[in-house]
Amino acid sequence: MATIFSRIIAGEIPSYKIAESDKFFAFLDINPMAKGHTLVVPKQETDYIFDLDDDLLAEMTVFAKKVAAAIKLTIPCNRVGMMVIGLEVPHAHIHLIPIIKEGDMSLANPRVKLSKEEFEEIAEKIRDKVE
Ligand code: 5GP
Image (tube, rainbow, N blue to C red; front, side, top):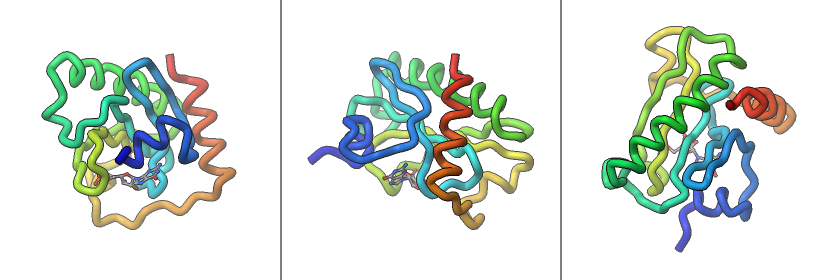
């Protein structure tokens, strides 16, 4: 059965899309740790990120770099943190999280509640800045 992220990539489940290439897809996390929290996923369905072949993993990092640059231009932050967990959804993904301080990367932090309109506005602003 397709993973939830494959269904998002296929457009079967809606998402706030940020960027897409032939191999990767980026969209806002639905339960964000900060405004602009974005997930970068390979279209290839692989559970564990370190099972991706070397070239795909390297390309995924470069794709994430472009998305991170657009997030940084959009959301006031000191930098964009990059995190990999992957315990909830069995489809490799990188979290890109705008942060001010180290503690902003803590999973113990409460999540940010956003309306559909706020998600749409953030996605549009980031999307416009992806090179
Ligand atoms: P992890 O697998 O790295 O522990 O976390 C998975 C992440 O995917 C979580 O931050 C969660 O909020 C996000 N997520 C799970 N299901 C969906 C979904 O259907 N849409 C979106 N946009 N994000 C999701």
